[in-house]
Amino acid sequence: MSKVLTARCYNHLHVPRSYTRGKQRVSVYVTWSYPGEANRDVNELDNRFSTMAEVRRVGWPNFEKPEYDALKFQQGIAGTLELFFVAWEQFQDLVGDVTGHPVPMYQRVDHAGHGLPLDERILADTDTLMVFGLDHMLTEEEATPGEIEAVRDFLTREGTCLVLGPHHDVGVSTDLKQRAMEYAHHGDALVPRQQRFGKYTRSLMKGLGIPIENRYGLRPATEKGSNLIVPLTRFQDVDNKGWLSGVTRFNFHMHLPHYALTIDDPKALRVLATQPIDLANPHPFTESGNREFNTCVWMPPNGKRAGDILFADSTVFSTLFGVDESLRRFWTNIVTTK
Image (cartoon, rainbow, N blue to C red; front, side, top):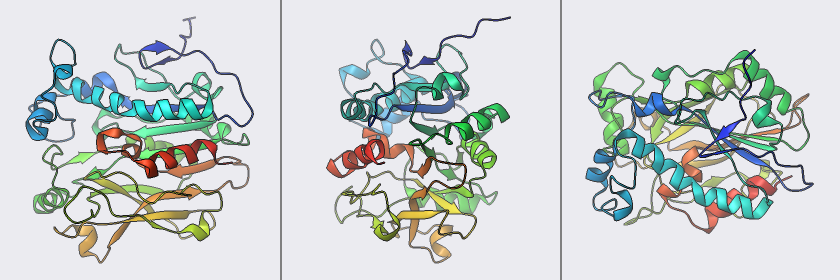
């Protein structure tokens, strides 16, 4: 019988955290296979992350700094994946300060090829589980029946919270003109005409019976002459727990998912906030008459499920796309809300 390895998180072995009343233990689970993403053929146009060369070219001169030199920083697609980890550090630090617990950053398949499913090694010492759905769908990452059952069991514990962040789904249509329209709408030269994310989170959501889908990649409206995102449209009357208390806006990202509700049940599904869309360039979603998209959704405890389920995109926790006091307040709310 093979030995069960200690759960590995980013760059170190995890040391289990003891329960402390009123102090949430937060864990982040990145759903990608790091090698599967880093080793994608850069000659493929679609469904891959950018290389560091592409990031440097499009983002020039932001990455023309010594810390991004090839002797100090990963290059190729791997370098872009590392940018995600660096940009999540402020979130980890803030949550660590607020809760008194470190925040492990797990990967479904890590740099060295170690696979780590969502199981008791992660869930046993976790109160708030954050699942960042950043796996490209063609890598075929899917939640197993055992993982789905483990998360369902996790949510029977009082005081737990599952934060799901399935990422955007750009270029679903086979119509190349529609893909071109979507590309012109969001305006990010680093995003290919088709970039579909989140097979793992989709399979987890299906297994848990969550009637929500991540759709599109929509550019949020910004205040004139700036990259400051316009305030959220909040629905405070349904936010009983105050998830968005003191939160006026998230950070600016060019292509955010719409969390579409696939059933109409306001008791089970509560849209806490929508985001106005930049209407400068058309998109099939806006051409259908939509002017805002669902950016934060809450599923309160229901039946045997004692834990909360919250939807917010992983970019909301990244300083790659800006950070201010409103965003820090949201981070704090997630780990302090009862």
